[in-house]
Length: 61
Image (cartoon, rainbow, N blue to C red; front, side, top):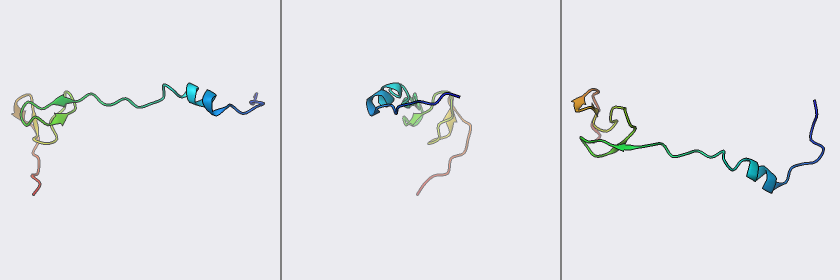
């Protein structure tokens, strides 16, 4: 198996990794409590999805 004969420079390594970054997740606004949530998921803040309460959320004091 061939191995590299010389080391790659920092610039060459960083150019190769230029597209290896994490993108921000898409967020939507909950129509019930107006907090941000993941699209097509029940809201973790109020527990509503599609106008109905689907999960019980404990209230923080």
